[in-house]
Image (cartoon, rainbow, N blue to C red; front, side, top):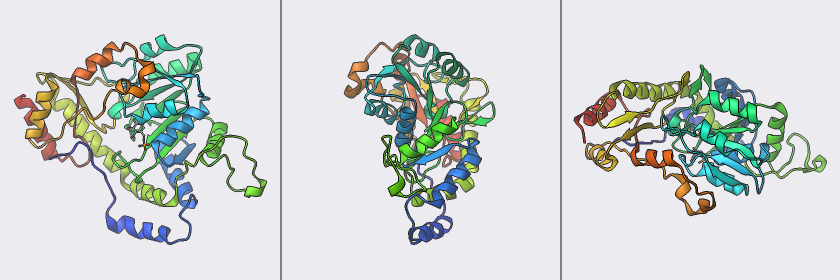
Length: 362
Ligand SMILES: Cc1ncc(COP(=O)(O)O)c(C=O)c1O
């Protein structure tokens, strides 16, 4: 079966000597290797304020705290995502206000978001679902006009670009996840990219109990609530080795995605996504809208290819019942939405085979 998602680990010969040396170095906590990982990540990404953490969820939480989100506030978010995007909002005590989506991409619709802004709105959580960048131009306008920070959850869109610039540089906060099945994994880990220098310093405190590193505990005075969210030298070592070849890995996703964009265009019974101008998705998944989805999935699985919706629309979870509202575009998208494999493990032969199966019909 060609899987929909797969973990990529560097070859043993490259990774193990470095891991072994750090494991027995006597310093496995957050140290110089983490600094080095952040520096290399910044070089890759282009934002100098990149703060590593122990998960994408922690990265989102740090961003929400920086945005000032507290109990009783409102955060506008999307139900078309993986659950952590939204469970992290509820963790702050804020209320989730669902925005509807744009049917062209499944991403949050800027006009719907504007219609839901109130005095209580403290942040907007926008997800680059499946690797497709959100409508960056419109969301930048919203961030500026309403003074409400956008948290761009780019967990699926590592390496994607807008106007040639990598995600991580377009909003006050952008977060990434390095969990097992993402474009790049550090086993578990995350990154929050921050625009403002002062907020970057504050984020360092939030990441580690509110304690300032580099001075002794006796001289420290905790003045804000912090957490144990730091990355350690072990995960950072994995990340550093991953970064050495990440450009090639991302290119493989993009090459496959572009191939499908061409080869599946005009095929009866399916609709392709329509990306926003100047944006380059990194195709963590290849998303389609198909007629008779169950039959489509069965046909794919019968041919040895995994296909699935992968995520449940988040507003259906009972924990979010207080946020329930009409979302006509989500209702429509939900009927047809499906993903097919697109990652580094999909060979040229595989993708040709996948396209030929789809073209035969279902
Ligand atoms: C869209 C999205 N946001 C956030 C997360 C949370 O990342 P992590 O699992 O690293 O906490 C994930 C991954 O599960 C995700 O898919």
